[in-house]
Length: 435
Image 1 (cartoon, rainbow, N blue to C red):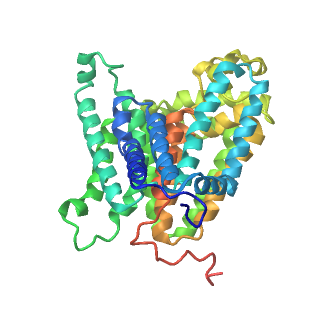
Image 2 (cartoon, rainbow, N blue to C red):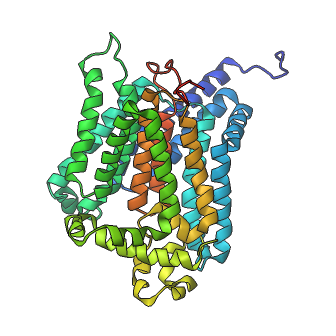
Image 3 (cartoon, one colour):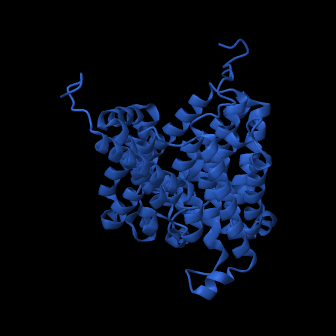
């Protein structure tokens, strides 16, 4: 006997087994997402693994619940969106640029995969339709972040003596720089839901969770060695506040700052050298500002040597041994051996040229354009997360590190679903007349 759709209905045992697999997939997905901060505390490059587990679980649950066709339709919509197409074009150009890199295989292709896989996981997670951006799970995520912050703070205040005694990894405080950034961005993405108007059934813990999360992340950053996390926290708080007070002005300022930073990356070293006095470098010695300025001068020379197509994706890791290095003045060649320029915009320029930078800038500008329709309460946290993430990437680590891309994916997905308390607010007008 068949149903009206022509498919044989599942028997009760089959249905029970299928439901069990769906629940198993959901729990695997939840475990990957919620335990990500703790995993980063234990192993500071584990974010892609946790994102992969979450993707496997949620996509499996979606397939078991509704079949392949709905998932493929949603995936097609994600890829066909302006942001999805721009990222796909950039990945295509990056892959093509390996053909003129001095290290295409295996290092270049591996770096491309490290970039593409977290983005693919993000697209699949969005297509699954099962990402749990709801209040109960936001509270669980906040609790786990608070625990991770406490564990890392205890280790940092004790001089990482526990790991030294156990012989686990390198007993240095900087191993928590990446987890601190993960806790900052993921906490910022779930904070709007926690700060929404509490319900009458909420107890003290639910009401205190938002402020406690902020204090935990702030405390971790204060005792950590991560200047990038402190800088990101400052940008996050500033843009969030400005976004609430003057949303349209803040959105325009962030868009201009983003575009200007991407466009001026080749001359960032020259700008810093001329504008930052020597005594300021001394005050910022812990952040290695002088060394960064010298690195940016060197990579700026490499960009100007090959501005259109760059030196090839992932070539920064050994740019001092590439043919481009011979076009750089001898006094600037030494700093090409540092591995990357500690600036995502500059690395994009050096490796993929102006073509890659344009393709990579499009998703950012398209995202900011989409944010214009939000009211101040919805706009502020999203704009703050964008600004903080970009500010960190512009002065800190390498551009294509998988843990960083996975963190941005997870934070974006947590924030993409509005809180019920703010979902009915009016959109931000584009002009004083509302048109």
